[in-house]
Image (tube, rainbow, N blue to C red; front, side, top):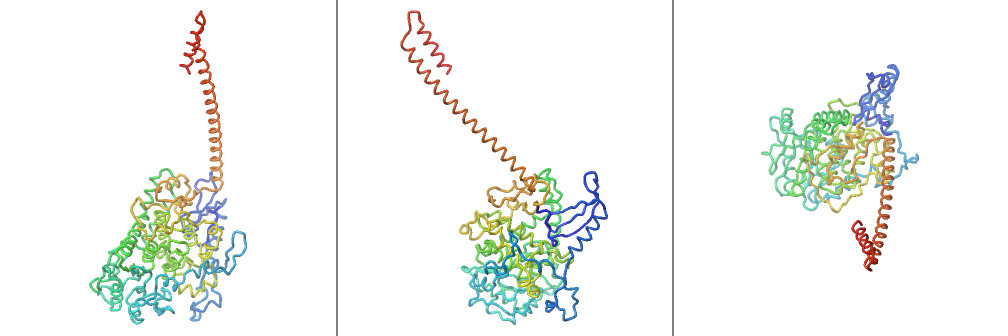
Amino acid sequence: DPVTHVPLGEIERIETKENRYRRKGPAMWLELGCKGVRIIRFGFKSEYTAETARRMLTDLVRCEVSVPQEMMMGHGAHNGTSSSAMKIDCFAYQHRIKDFEGKMLKAKVPRTRDGWRIYDPIKEYKRMGLPDGFFRICTKNEDYSLCDTYPRCFVCPSTISDEDLLSMAKFRSRGRIPALVWRDVNTNATIWRCSQPRVGLQRARNKSDEELIDRIHQLNQRGKVIVYDARPLKNALANLALGKGYEEASYYRNIEVKFMGIENIHCVRSAFQAARIAALTSNGETDGRFTHKFESSNWLKHIRCILKASYEMTWRVAVDKASIVSHCSDGWDRTAQLISLTELCLDPYFRTIAGFFVLIEKEWCSFGHQFKKRLGHFKTAPDQDISPIFIQWLDCVWQVLRQFPTAFEFNSHLLLSIAYHAYSMRFATFLHDCQKQRDEAKVETRSVSLWTYLLNCEGYKQGTYTNPFYNKQKHEVIFVAWDNTHVTVWADYWLKHCCSSTLYQLVKDRTAPHTLAQSQLPNHPSNDKLIGMIGHALRKRLSKEILAKTKAEKELALVKKQLEELKKQIQHIGGAGAGGGDDNGRGGVAGGDAKQRDDDA
């Protein structure tokens, strides 16, 4: 039963509660609140046993080990940092993947199915025709001295020197300078990502930064370079008081700044919590009641806002064939959402299973989305830093997949597995905040990648994650819709553990049939026993219908046979009446009787 399998990393709170209805259950409840959308309760006969179980489970969830002595180098231990401050998850670094037969998965897997090697930045840049005479691969960040949250190498214009990059790093927040992440080899339209500039109330400017933006325009002179600022304008203005802000269009040549109005991590966290309460407290009485509660959480409002911004960026690159730049505040939350979703719509490669893994590795892992803080791993981050930004993006991907069910090689099951293991801490893929931390922790040699598991597990071999309706030739560029008709509840995530099967079915039925492939229909959340009962009832009903159909066919054949015999009798009697009667008129009477029988027939 999947309800009983709860990763320790997914547990958010552990509480004991008194059962108000003791006649109907145990005296005490031990309640586990998960970071996802489910609550698990264990019943106990006494308060003492429930409290004992709570303490034991709390210690188990907090079970962390010190970094081994040989791993202290690179973690600051030689500078006097105590080993007790160096905590890592003991499960992700000690477990080994097992297949369904219970045997250990071989350590040597093909390179194409090795999760730590599936993304090669040099290979990815070559796929986009880089480097060439206009762009170069910058290795100034090989030791993470330029920007500690950026990858070791990235692409910049060949006319921009390393000194210019150092100057820009001081001007951009967190040193996250504009870096090229995607290029159309046919139109030379490019996509760049960065963080907000440090302009402040004094409206500071940086010559190197202005030259870089101007160079982006020179390499693709199809209209202005549009800077898509993911934030609302009011938030960008508020950052001016903190010494940051947004690009002053008068300082740059041929640029335009647009604000996309996507709310910050705090609004997303509040919306997620409200949507989770709506899903967990739904009783399935009416569809409208749940829909109203979920819509009031503003979760779908944020989803629509992201999809709309992604649509505008996709249109600008694909139709106008122009280059764009995108950033938010620090460039690792909303920027990652917009950039990766736009690339997903533009590039069919990222809509394959392997390409989707590459997209996540490139835009989320290597460019420094703070998984550890946002997902609340190890409880090292304050509560105000926790926000399900990555889960929100997966929801956006599902919305696109639902609208274009033949454009993706994978289905909703793959998204659910990724969302599940984002919290499970079983794999080191989402344990750290940037590539530098992963290198220091030596995750490639000490742990297993989530992509290795997904590419080698039995479910992948059996086609669990594969979309049978996939047609890679049909869709090159897709334009996602964001209106109320097309954006709906991701039922198999939000309602997977919902107690009401009726509500789950109602929400599933609301999905537009012309936009959803049969393979994307969410599975029913009932348990195995209930599924077996339903299956038995359906088989019994089908058997009765088959018997009724067979019986009806036999009766119809008998009636047809009787009609044929009756027709023959009528023809025989009619022929006898035509021969005349005796002197007493008996033949005429017989003929009349025959006519009467014919009329009756």
